Picture 1 (cartoon, rainbow, N blue to C red):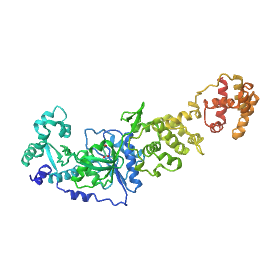
Picture 2: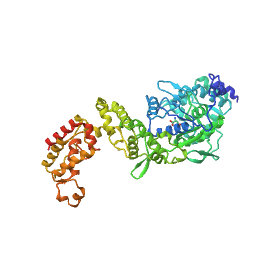
Picture 3: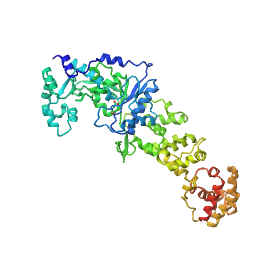
Picture 4: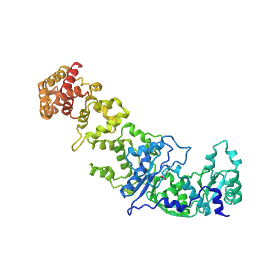
Length: 556
Ligand code: GLU
């Protein structure tokens, strides 16, 4: 068989050679040890929480080593493509500050010299390598005849041509393979003349009895049986399969480390073979286990429909991107939290991420942990940062609240400063959604009394507390002077300020100073618990404090 002739017959429109393509993709000039990584999502759905994992790992490994991280859109399956998915990928990466150095940008644009970064625009490149494989007798066309097409008509033609593989029909498999592999030039020519479509298959030389040793950077040492399947390289429309596009693209784009989901592990044998056929250096691989969740007492894979799976939910619920990023880091490296405690001020990007510290089984997704991490992350922010985060979220999801906040920015920031600085900052918020209920008593129109004063206290006493406190209230009092007044009011009404004495003889008093400040707290904030009451009152201002006391007295 004259393979050159066959190659011309199948790919008459391809004039260039692999050598010419290689020239368009020069070897990257990078420092020793620099890693080139990528994220290569298919725009077939919206970003999944799990996708942040390989993306973050790839980004960290590249940037920690002075290398390059890029985004390639794997849009070879137009049928499964979801409108808006590509935009979502690009926006989500930006939102979570997973910055890439090259790749697809919004509005069909891109950046970098190793493009196109959308596989749908690289048809000629793949076909050039495909033609070369045919020339070398390493790949052959497999035609679908008119009759077969007819038979497939009821179903989905293209999908069937693409998916039909040798294992569909074990009885006739051997015969078929032989017949199809031994296609003659004349047979192929006849089919081409009839206009019958073909897929291009690899002519596999593998023997599954033989095993290739292989080291995955996460899974460790593996033995991969050789591939013996004549898998499809190009579909009938000339578009490559994932396997073929992966080999060609990661070679040309200079990827040193392929970080991808473990669902690709079974395809590894195909990729090893393909890189060998194409004379490409095999990159290093990391196959990441799927995220897990607890269901009762057992671990289950976190599915796309599970709560927490859609990345967009995090934004909607008001998790700041930094919280999600910190949480991803805790899931990726078991020593991140320890590092975080020792380095509370540093950005998480300074953490020395290490492949060795990754768990080989799936990380466990857990909302409680996420909330905890988020509370800590928010507690480390300045009031200005919190304000920016909340207002950005509220502008999108709670317009009324956004208006309230921006009507008096200074006031809002004072509220957000309460208990913020110092050794043990308050941890009131896990999500921006928590801020409104937390702040509500600072705004008269949404203030609601949520707690009532315990009925065991005499109303007259409570009323007297409110009146006396209002009379003596001076907003310039410091914390001590302020509390001194509450103590005095307590004593004057038969409530002790001596906690020790109270404990020894609770029946000897109407109550204690804690009860009295509790009355005031409920009057002012409507709640049993609140941050520092003295500070709250200073922020509210005297006028509001007096009105609240008066209203509370009237409501008794
Ligand atoms: N497009 C593939 C996917 O979305 C990419 C896998 C890879 O990173 O190589 O699963």
